[in-house]
Structure formats: structure tokens, C-alpha cells
View 1 (cartoon, protein in one colour):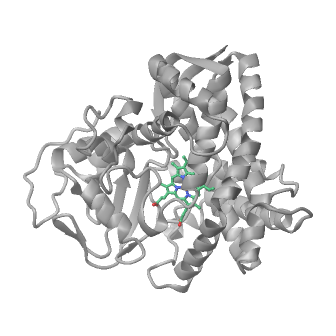
View 2: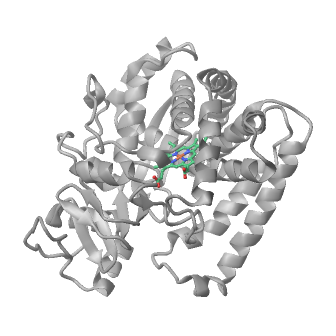
View 3: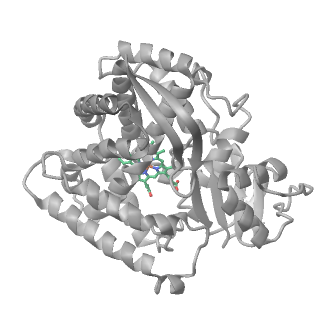
Length: 422
Ligand code: HEM
């Protein structure tokens, strides 16, 4: 933890403020984003003013209050490119997105996800063969992203030829990375003249065109049919597909990579999960130990580790009131460590999920409230399917020191995964 922050007295009427200047705070944040937020939460409590207009919220009760009130007293104030959207509470744009979301969520039925998982099990089997041939995997994220991106493309487009979609999504994500990873939030007029913004716009247009063309091509099935069947027009379908394709490409790959890393680091828990995988036939309710491994990993390593909101009207948040006009930053990674329901929070322990249900706000890897991840059920099934198939065939060890890249998606780096046959 590199942050150097001294303690201030807590006043329940007034939101406590950091007693270092903004430049020093940004410096600490740049050096270690997770450590900075964690140190601030530990020293100042669940709600802290980082600098004028920006409030850090980490306590479970307070996180729950903010997320639950999304679209009412606060809203998502950045789109994927960190641009300020106009989707404020009550706006036509927000209502349109919420309706598109509902159509997608209702359309992702349990049967559709289960059918997809059977296909995915075959793809994960091929992945296990490739991993075994290589023996040492030094690019686990990219290896898994190959599977998750093909998986979501198939889920969205059914039998349509969608093999070019993962590459288009990757190009878009590559263009977004420097924007999302930047610690600085430039004013909109600066963004107008930034080359990286132009590149991201070009790739976004290209991606939207590719999605529409693929959606209109010969073939059937997948979420595209559900979205058109729900009465959405081309623009709304492309909006939904863009969000889903980008969200379901690298994030589930990172989350699955973290599961393998943790199981490779904890041989006994790997055996527990493998025994469960052996009992699983690939459909129906998964053996609980596999679910615990995924839940515990998402607790320690929530791949989408931070969310932001803009406060639009006075809003109660624990003992405090968030003032309109402020921005709220919610680092889930910190909440999953400071929540009192997790004894010894740094310890990876899949058994802690046995007969345990965390209180509201204490476990939010998929967010919560009206803007909760719309692919949460799909993602969990995807992760469990890939992990189960790999554990049924392979053993994992780790070499090197695992480091954490938190510039955008939370990603494990700096190690090799050693793969042995069962
Ligand atoms: C382990 C994998 C995943 C994790 C950890 C994750 C996490 C999250 C989180 C935390 C949010 C909410 C952010 C906020 O409140 O500001 C979110 C939103 C979203 N997720 Fe996921 N996600 C995952 C996989 C997926 C998948 C597979 C899909 C699609 C099938 C998906 C689609 C979306 C979409 C479209 C949104 C935006 C929802 C909105 O703006 O209303 N995610 N995700």
C-alpha cells in the first residue's frame, strides 16, 4: 500500500475529506489504484470526499444505497468511452436503454444459457487440448479471451457467420484501453481534439456496422432473434449488442483467469473443485464447490472492479447525504475486503461460501440495482463450464509472481500457468 494519508476525525454530519491535496492523492492513486482506495477506506471510513466533487463509497450499506438508487438519485455518468452521456434520470435515452436491457434480460432464458453451455463445454474441451500441448501458458488472459469472445459471439448471433466479430470487438477494446486506463478525466472539449478519441470513434463506427451486417446476415437463433422478436429497431439492437460484446469479451476472461490462478496457488482447493467437476455432467445445477470457487474468486478479484455514478439529487447514503453534482466512485475490490462478514478477507477460501449469504452491498462483483450486470447469469455459467471442463482434464500450477493490473479490467499478470495432464 503506497498511499500516505493521515487520519482525520469522523463527523457523521459532514462527509470526511482527505487531508492531502489533489495532486498528492492522484499521485498515490496512479502508483497503486487498489492500495490507495483501500488505505483511504481503512483510515477514513465508508464514505470519504477524495477531492471537491468526488466521493469514495466503500461500506456495504452505503454501496447498496448508491447502487439501489441508480436511475433515481444518481446515474451512470460515463459511457464506455468515459464520455458524459445524456442518460440522466427520466431522460428518453435512459428509458430507451432500460427497455432494451429488459428485453435482453428476459430473452436470456435459462434454457438458452443451458443450451449454450453444452456448446461451450465442447469448445472448452478443445481449449484444454491446446493448453496441454503448450504446457506453459504465459498469456492466460488472451488464451481465455479467445474462448469467451467466441462464446458471446455465438450466443448473440446463433448460426450466423460471426467469426469476424471477436476481432472487431478486440480492436474496439484496444482503442478504448488508453482512454479507460488514463487516471485523468479530460474535459469534453479536450476529447474533441484527442487522436485516441478519434480512433475510438472510428472503431466504434466500424464495430456497429459489423454488428448490424452480421445481425442481418443469413442464419438464425441467438440473442439477435430475441431482440428483434421483442420489437427493438436496428439502432437499439446494435446498442445492446455493442454493450454486450464489449462487456463479455475480456471481463469474463479475466475473471476465469483469476479462478485458475487461485486454484493453481491453492492445490487443496483445486482438488476440492476438481472432485466437484468430476460429479458434474455439464447441465443442471452445478456442484456447489464450483460455484464457491467462482464466488470466492469474484470476491477477491472482481474483474470489473470499480463503478462510478453522478449524484443528481440529495441522496441518503448510510449516515451521510450525497450532494447533487458530486461523482461517486465505488471500488468493489475494496468493499469485498472491508465488509465485516469476511473474516481474514485476504485469504482465498472457497469454503467460506458454504451456507453463507452476504448482506446487501457486501458482495457486488456484478454490481446491484437497476444497472446490475445484465450478463451475470450467463457469465457465471460460462465461468463454471470452462473451469469444470479444464479441471476434469488438467492440473494447474503457477510459476512466477502474480501481479495485478488494475488500469482497466482487473487482470493477473507476470506469471506462467503450468499445465499437466490429470
Ligand atoms: C465475470 C464476468 C463479468 C463481470 C464480473 C461483470 C461485471 C459487471 C458490472 C460490475 C457491471 C455494472 C457496472 C456498474 O454498475 O456501473 C456490469 C455491467 C454490464 N455487464 Fe457485466 N460482467 C461480467 C460479464 C458480462 C457478460 C458475459 C455480459 C453479457 C453477456 C455482460 C454484460 C454487461 C452489460 C451490457 C453491462 C451494462 C449494463 C448497463 O449499463 O445497464 N457482462 N458488468
